[in-house]
Image (spheres, rainbow, N blue to C red):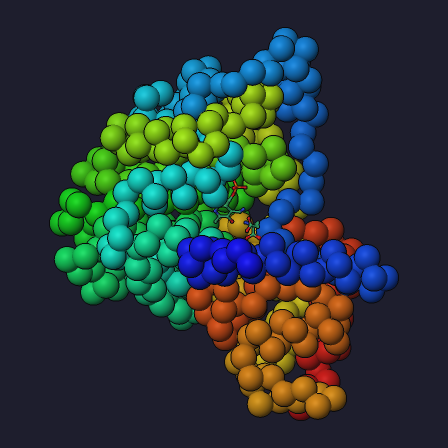
Length: 397
Ligand code: PMP
Ligand code: GLU
């Protein structure tokens, strides 16, 4: 009998991926399940990007690529950082990977030693926790709370710092809460970070363009901490390219070189064709995304309106990404058909079985009183899903 490693045994399966797998299986069994579980745009990749990919194949870009990415791609990323974020990252401070997920893993594995602490404000994206654990770091969760629009303050950050702290990881716009940090809120965090020059912060900005109210602000804009910040981004969300697999970082030279070394042993450079397609995406004026962002904004209104009509659900107003993260604790102790709700897990299972709507429990994101609804689906689908949820929740008494 072959024993698997302790490392893999200790790892949780990604809850977002597990729930989308489960809804696929239920659909294959003939169940009419609506899946609002996976955070994936339902748009298809724009034609001009696909054309660049076809041209790359015709031009025989089919071989191994430089590990950190083609130079012309890194030049396009450097320009993008200047254009959209006023950040100056030369090409030797940029590393392209097979997705923001790998970029985060590269950085954590390259920076965190066994036993060092990584501060993760909750709610957080599911994979941060497991990437830190597999790297033998110790996750230190700081609860942001719905009353603070799920954002932490500099004071909260400072209270969590110890002499073992090595890193903090957060996203803005945030998955799963949609919260967006303003420039002032980031400055408040930066004032603390600058007093601890050995701490690295991963700022995950993958939802940068899906932002409905504020201008996107990057943590790395503050020169006094820029070298401590690793800016993570990618093409999955804004350009509807989840399956193409490309993410990137802007970092200080040492961290960039370390990530290149890491992926030189693990994966090599990402797909040559994807890289050429990503150049087309990143060179495009992001204003062309306004239609898609407008669609996400109307869907957000639809979902917030519908949730507002259900007694007991408490939610913040997400300003970005495509998730709503309602608190469901009102339903604790309520029952239907012999099922009693004790936490967000129970409620997510109840909605899957009773309403045929798949969502992800908040526990996977560090808040067991919540559930995550992804509204990256058509208005028609969302309307039907919201009706089903309302009917099922009203049965609980
Ligand atoms: N960060 C966050 C906050 C995400 O929601 C996702 C979604 N997959 C990722 C990173 C990873 O993105 P990618 O598809 O580029 O790996
Ligand atoms: N980031 C998306 C989500 O949170 C995609 C799934 C994943 O990569 O975990 O649903």
